Length: 350
Image 1 (cartoon, one colour):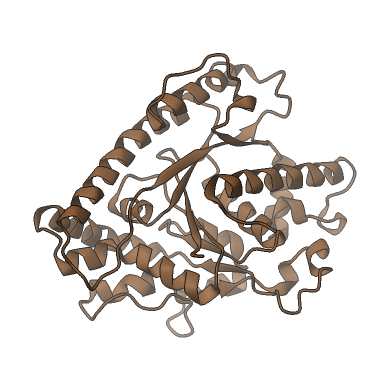
Image 2 (tube, one colour):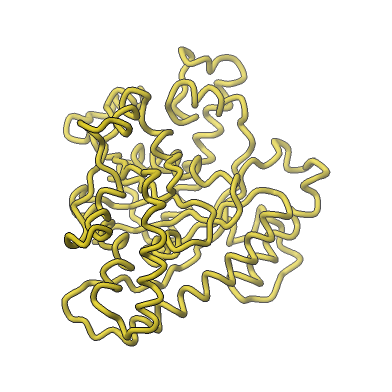
């Protein structure tokens, strides 16, 4: 069975996309899956979250440099051929939690891998934009299709190399050609949201642009007569939304959240699913809501300092007293979210 490719995307920034991908990658690894976290955001924040400072320094060195997603597409920019084989960074065994390392991992170390991002990926934007136009106007030229499908074909190679069960893709909040090509490569879409009106505006703009991109790609495929190049289907199926940084008490949400919390579920149904709203459904009972992740600000700071997910924090990291219970709570939050996403994508967890 091929790996499920799940994109995390919203046109609004600051909604927790990178944090969600990072923690879900670790959670799926803890649950026994082979996982790739793919950083297709030119800011490369996911890569900076996974790798320590010593490893990150290699990005700026002329020799011994880490190969990134940009290195895989670089041949397409230099007219020297097609995509290069992707490089994966495997997360060191000593970053695994005590609970996980206690599970006979002699043959399991390396289940979690990173496809590193790169600031230079932004230089691929113009070429992707040009070749998308060529696909639309030129009846599916081989070169245009080669460039436009580059991310999908890189992820297919990545899945085979890692024998991955799932690929989690982190994207920037832009509406540029990089994200268009990345979303065309995805099987499923998860939409992270914050409890504010700008998230709702972002949700509406996302619905419009997503449908436009899907229609364009459908047209491109209908005009394609190439028999030599494998191409993505471009279905991009939205499976739900995740609300990030919920108030700790759902029965007493902060005033700023009062209205937004009741509009999210209806906005999602109307603009993403093209279905009528149901005012009687609360956000907690909305079947399109994959998860409500509460605010764990204190744990987040500790996790960043310890360079590990919040639910792997130990007393040595400062997770003592009330934080001990919070670690267990955040573990349950992300475990529930991981299972809900798996259910929606037919991802098998033993």
